[in-house]
Image (cartoon, rainbow, N blue to C red; front, side):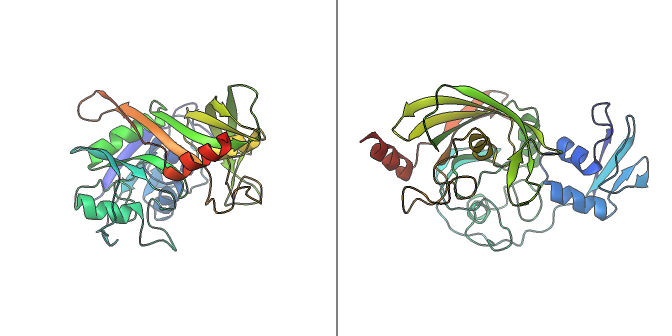
Length: 305
């Protein structure tokens, strides 16, 4: 039995692509998943099937038929989890470096989802489908730290709404190249790189607003230790923003220098320190912090010498 969600196109949405409008209104789903629904004829505008490139006008009625989640086929694995908080609605884990969040081509085992399926059994939300049970937001493979996973659909929707409203507290720690002169705020748009589709870039056509606040914690000879607070949560946001001001994240093999000054460093020195939000059941504010990983502390100590 499918679930039908309806929405009316607001004035500020008029003229946007249909797939982008759906991505903004249903942030718990990936854009590629919504595009597949459109291609399968599960999305209509004013009662007629529409294409992803359609540009509805103000007042148009959009209906989306979401199929029931498929039976999970991803294998549970007894992978240890560093659990920062857990209750009947959600679990907050400290994701280690090198762990992929959810299965994808080339990574069907050893992911956070595999570990969660073992730990939570059947208690994970099904909104994001067969490969992403419980996953309401992500952090990159080589980024460590706090990640919220939802155990039921009501909690999933509540957290997704807060993500869409940019009301969730999210602070990161990073080591960046060069010496920053002062604290600051980066305001740009971020979108897919026009030439390299695996990368994101600032101020590209059809980019989305992105805001990062950064605060200097400690300065070294050639690097700066910073705290970054996200107002928005775009793909690779901190990594792209710090590159855009000439201070890429240390170890970033996509947006940083081709040669890393610290041999053996695997990926960017970026840690999702703190996450805070209104609990979906209690209505109280909940904030959880993940301690810096050992490799990060060791690197800071080297820089301090």
